[in-house]
Length: 310
Image (cartoon, rainbow, N blue to C red; front, side):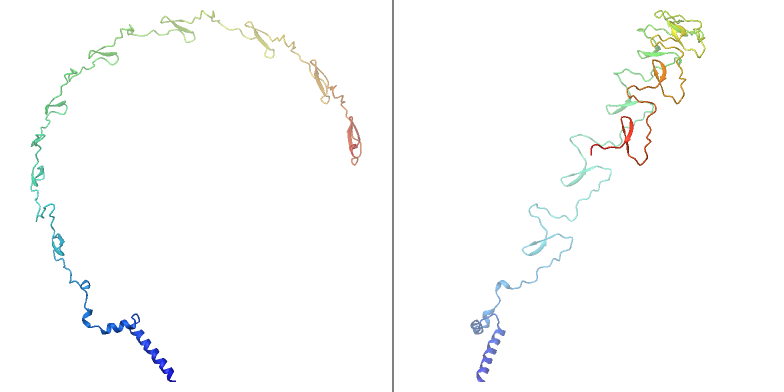
C-alpha cells in the first residue's frame, strides 16, 4: 500500500514540473531561479521608437524627407526655387508675343527682318479687270511674252460661211493644198428613178459596163411552157428538160400488181419479188402439230423436237 502511494507521489511531482515549463529542463530552471532580476533588462536593439513625425504642411505645398524630418521641397542640383506666382501674359490677344530670357516680350524675328503691317494692300480693281501681283503691288495683268490684247477678234462672218484663223485674224476658209473651191450648188441627178446611172468624171451618166458587154434588154424571155411540163435553160433559152446521162423517160412504169402481191424493181421494170439466195417460196410451211407436241425447224420444215446433244 505504501509503495503504491510513493509511486503516485513521484508521478505527480514529475507531471507538475512538466506542466510548469514543458520546454525547459529541470537543471536550467534551477539556474534561472537563482539569477537576480537585474539581469533581464531590455536590449537596446528592441527598444520602441517614439511616434514618427507627422506631415502638417498644407496639401498644396511640396515637401520632402530630410534626416528623418519633413521639410520644404528643395532641388539643390538645378538651383530652382518655387515662385509664388508665375509671370502672366498681359499683352492683347491680337499682339504676337514670344518668351525671351524668361520674360514675355513682343515677337521679333531679326533673321527675316519682317514687320507687321497694320492693313495689307487691298485689290480695288473691278472684278472684270484681270490683275496680277508685281513687286508686292496689284497692277493690271500684262503678258509681254504672248503679246496678247484684252479685246480678241470677233467672228462677224455669217454662220454658213466657212472661216479659219490666220495670224490671229478670222478670214475665209482656204485650202491651197487641195485647190478646192466652194461650188454654189452641186449637180443634181435628173434621171428617172428606174434608169441606172453612174458617176463619170464628176458627171452623172447612164450606167455602162464595157467589161461585161452587157446591154439592157427591153423585156426578158418569158417561159410559155405549161406548168406541168418540166423545162430547163440551155444557152439562155427555155427548152424541154432532158437528161442524157440517166436516159430516163418522162413516163415511168406504173405498178399494176395487186397490193397483196410482193413486187420489186428489176432493170427499171416492176416484176414479182424473188430472192434467189434464200431459195424461199412465198408460201412457207405451216405448223400443223398439236400445241402440246414439241417441234423444231429443220431444213425449212417443221419436225418433232430432237436434242442430239444428249
